[in-house]
Image (cartoon, rainbow over all chains, first blue to last red; front, side, top):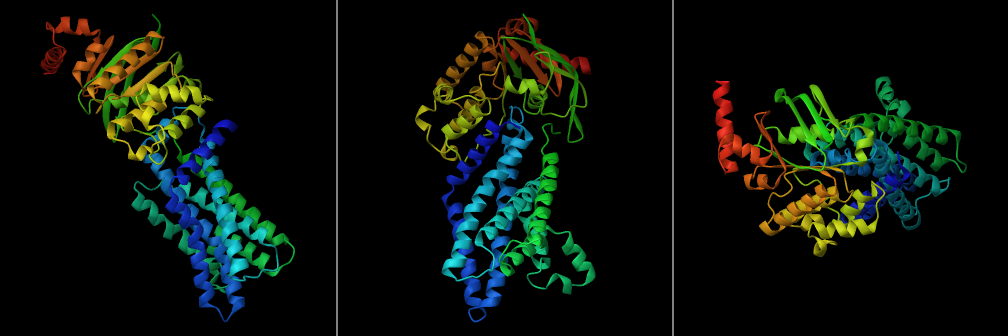
Length: 245
Length: 240
């Protein structure tokens, strides 16, 4: 890995996004619209709104970065740019971390805007500080980047890549504790939920919601998510082949 | 003259089919070599093997004394893929700048290279909005910007207007005169006359490997097109 190449790759990915104004607008506005929807759905039950809005702040960046990364990396693979990059001094890690950094930064902005909107406009309340919410949102976004990168290796077309979204994302949303508390699920469902990264980021967010100070459980959960990111990135790196058939 | 590339008994399979059947050849440094042959003959596969992105079944490709694709070569080899591989959602300048940055090169080389491929007026334009010919020249600029000492160009002049094509060939000639080894694939025979050396491939085998003059002499004609036809017929008679 070379710092110079990593920096210019990150800048290149951000530049690509910068030219796509509509995507930027959707990245920022979409979470606000969905949060507003939830606000009006439960306008007489602020406790429920607080719980659901908080969890959604963690789920958005995961879904969106998963989609964006799997499509962009698939394009690199199919357009020939990846093959060309592999004849240059660029290392696999430069590309991998370049994507992680670029989309992590975007997620930080998105997380800050969406959280700000939830706290100040919609009146969401948490016991802990909002900074932790943004931190967990960014961790989720990087998780989305890592899994998106990995899944892009198993898709040949963008149609296929998009369909990995429901496969990877929906079971995690269903089992993360948003709909049914995890300890009330059937044993085998809880076991599946135990190995899904989203369960830990949702638990971490719930901890921020319920406690004034950062708890050990929150840090442990963040650590688990970081560990899964590392594993997914390592697996993703293995799918980036310099030599192809 | 020194050898830049040594290919020995190269066998490559793609999609379960053998597409190169034990190719051996040698390419000199500072020379423009034309890689010619019909579509599907194995030109791109051979080029991919030389730049080290092709999985090979057996045989050896040595580039500037190193095995093809090794780390040290990535600073010296420039590869242009057949279909333009640049980022359509970046401007010409941003694309060329990015590829320059991978080699630690700065703005002056970038501007110069964009001028060399005739895209000075399109510098700030998104690649997505360029014409087909401009698009492939943007891709070429990204290859030329690193000043590679080995250039592997897969059909760089396809779809270009005649004046630009002429300028690009002069450019390749200048680079070779400065010591670079240039390999250009083409299926247009009139371009073959501009090369120092020709490598004609058909169905994954070499059927001619010589200077244009020698190829013509061997076939007993002054016309390269005709010479190739004769050579192809001869090999087919031998095979029967």
